[in-house]
Length: 244
Ligand SMILES: C[S@@+](CC[C@H](N)C(=O)[O-])C[C@H]1O[C@@H](n2cnc3c(N)ncnc32)[C@H](O)[C@@H]1O
Image (cartoon, rainbow, N blue to C red):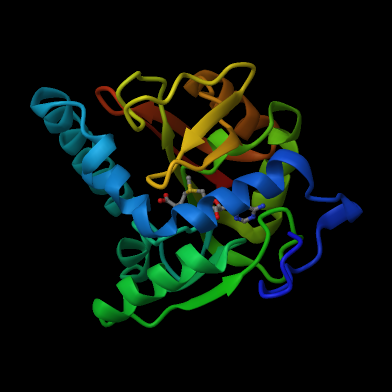
């Protein structure tokens, strides 16, 4: 990442260099950390008017209810955990470890969890690094839409290698909707979207609105059973599956 003050990431699998848009995404989320939750809370540039914001809040509540009803337990890993919006919910189900490539959102996640009195291990780690142990459950929020189409199978393979047989995988992600991001952001073109922060700085991120049926097929091909990929009314995709 070219900044000596940042902790080194654990090594990638296969010696793949995280250059280009992948490292730009990490820099983006590092810089966005302090304003990230404005997106969940529809604050400032993320508000799209009362009707749209009410629909967003209803979908967010539906997603939280859905995640809360997943039978997580035991050792749980959250990949690309960011500011830890979903982490307290997971931490109440088992022994949670949260991982992210950027220390800035992770420290906000740590503070959120500490404020809730929840004891969670938080570490800087690349999602593409090989698992260092096997766990009972794995969650990622709004990460799969950042995974290159050409690497989706590779990512699901990593998820599978994190899990014990029968382990539970769940994810929440974005559906395509013009009012799901900050006002003024254009839709992705060729899977790449320009994002602007409050200070006016801009970054490119990969953003892919995978179809639920495509995610379900990819999960089945990666060795998962009990595959269930659904959507909330408007904004989110919800997926869960068990490793065979
Ligand atoms: C859209 S945010 C999602 C945050 C959180 N999971 C949520 O649901 O609110 C994507 C997260 O992925 C992290 N990230 C980006 N590239 C990564 C990588 N190669 N390895 C691990 N985390 C990465 C970013 O730092 C950011 O926190």
